[in-house]
Picture (tube, rainbow over the protein chains, first blue to last red):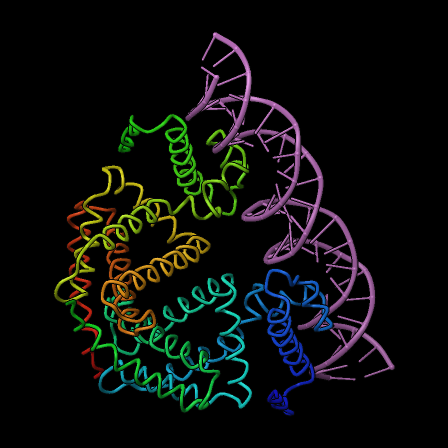
Length: 211
Length: 211
DNA sequence: TCGATTCTGGCACTCAGTTTCAGAAAATAT
DNA sequence: ATATTTTCTGAAACTGAGTGCCAGAATCGA
């Protein structure tokens, strides 16, 4: 049972709607083909063919073969960064980051859950995708740091900002991993609950002692 | 002024010594050529030629073009993981990880500083290398978690272990960045001092508040 | 409808990475 | 020293990702 993708915004110019359709077709085809036949065994020609476009066109939408497969993950972080930049911070920063991420998850389209689960399954199975998503998340962290540095009037190199960014993405990724492992059961509420728990584990981990 | 590489262990069989020589030649050539001409502009043929071997041989020593350039970084983490696995833990885990890493740094050969600085400079300049090293460090974190899980009789998926591993690599990488930015001045003592400061910034970052 | 703008397909090209295999070199046995 | 076995290397052909280029198609604005 697959959740249908929401309709495209009718107010958009024709050309833009077409681009969005192509983008979706490519991302969907990537998820489908990589899952069915494996990442390496699927060539870009096939993938592009499945979406009725040429290889050249593929690279106009995605910078790499891997990028099409992690589109659902990218959607989340894009929404998160946008939400973060339009947010005024007050109180503990880690809490703010936590809330901003929860808000971003909540705001995503209804078809996101399913695509995200499929994406993470693929990432767990394909080393090439894991490598790519690690790199992608590193970029997200950099943007978080830049955004926070601006808001808090701190230096780009401030260790605390890097640590907070690191902790936020790590906590979310780990809770996402568990959620996906359970097949996405419980929906986003369950995902967000796991994320809460992960954030709470942070101070606990600093106190961890041996024997 | 370049620090000469230490002589090879005479007790090793001839064949092994030759392999080590080739490996060094390739890693050194990578650092030299990538620095001089750029990562993309240097082909594997040139690189292999510089070390007097064929392209095939290159791939018998390194899994990717990038790997030869980050050999100094890999050396450190390999020593660290080895030291960690032969260490019995007592007291706060973060402190143990901190000490194990400091010990690994101290134990490296006298030529390491220079190669590490060159490596990190290259990484800062070449996105492809940054991507690769991010992936490499992720592998190190996984091995840390596995090692700790074994020693502490905890689950592989324990959030606290992942967070501690993440924090350790992040703290070191950030302090390494600063050290390299200052040209490696002060030697390893300076590097380790920066690392101490970074580790201390961890609890501080959790308390960071806005306005 | 027409002209300007933007997007697409097709093609040729580079180069990283893999595979295969025959021959060189080192280790081992005689 | 010589023969034998094992391990390593170089050469060459191959796959496929990613790039650059250009002619023609689709869209937009008037």
